[in-house]
Length: 368
Image: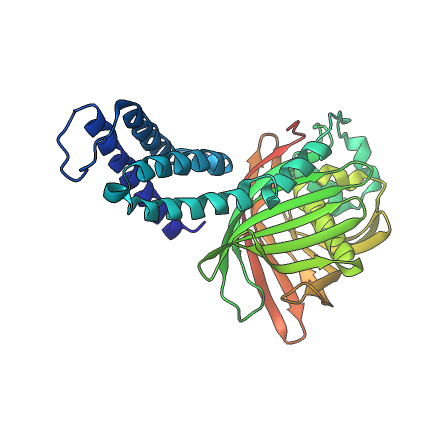
């Protein structure tokens, strides 16, 4: 829901809730209200009060519970409006507005939503784990710039990462000429025998909310975008999507879980003092990328030729060079990660940035 929609709904809830207090006041004789010409019994006055409380409670109700509380509020409200129809019938208009918000809340936050799918997958993926501590001896098989990278990111002396949760904000666009869409996002990556990635984005396109859900669990990767949480505008899947998401998962691993670079699923080719090539295998997919490091030993770019750009509807794919320059490393707990990054397509017509990501928070080896 956009900010304008939220403010409009907030105004409706406050005014509608306060008007319901008038029915309670008339029933118990607290005020003479000429607007309400029909008598209201005390039992019905209590229902007016409950309807007022339910409407006002919606102002503070968390999004995931809004549809439940909202359905109760609309039901109570319409009951009392029907009981005083000649006086209160126009309150039905407000109830219709609230009901639309309730329906949207159900499809965007309820059990059939992308958020519910994210939460269900997260519960299944988050299993108790223990990890060995990374030592200097573990680094000896890595190219020198990768060794130094694990040192500067605080990986040495810490347990290996087996999952992380992160939250983001930023902006994204479909092509070099498309308008930018702002977004917030939540992410969960796990690193077991079959690494997994969940990335749920709340974006705004042409003033309308859009859910974007990247899911890579087991062998299949999917990518769906839904306007108003209902209308599917992108439905990406298939071999190209599997390969592309393998590159993305490898990218996440390098940037936010560097201790996993010790895993046997990755082979290394030293290139020079500041560059190394990593070859990552996940299931049936094997992808590679060049990792570029700066003088401080921080990873500053990741470049791969194994990713595919999707068409606007997610039905066709074009192989293109993909890179993710990053900067502004910060410490979270004992570990340092970049907090700002870009995603770039190196199109034959010219390189352009299609995503800007700002890390808000990250936690490692979480239980829930």
